[in-house]
Amino acid sequence: MTLSTRQIQQAMTALRTTAEQDPSDVIANRASDLAWRLEAAGANVFAMSADPKNWQPWEREMVRYAMKPHTKVERDLY
Image 1 (cartoon, rainbow, N blue to C red):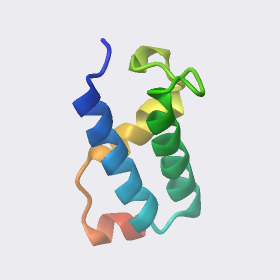
Image 2: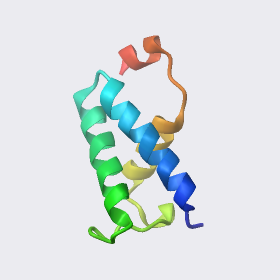
Image 3: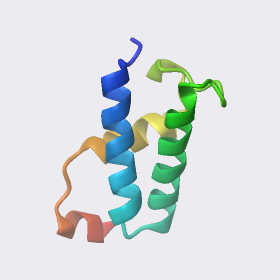
Image 4: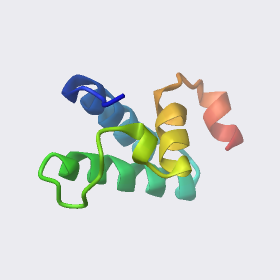
């Protein structure tokens, strides 16, 4: 299933928010990297597919994590 432009934009917004707010540098850096690559995917700069089935497992998991609502306490646990 290919993601729509709206779904990709929602994922990018969630990933950017995670990158800014997550206390874990690893999670923040991966979220930022993935948001940047999704943005560039429109120009096919990195040949990143709009179909999550073609993504790496960590990329799918990062989007799931970013889209899930977190409380401050949950963020502090990571």
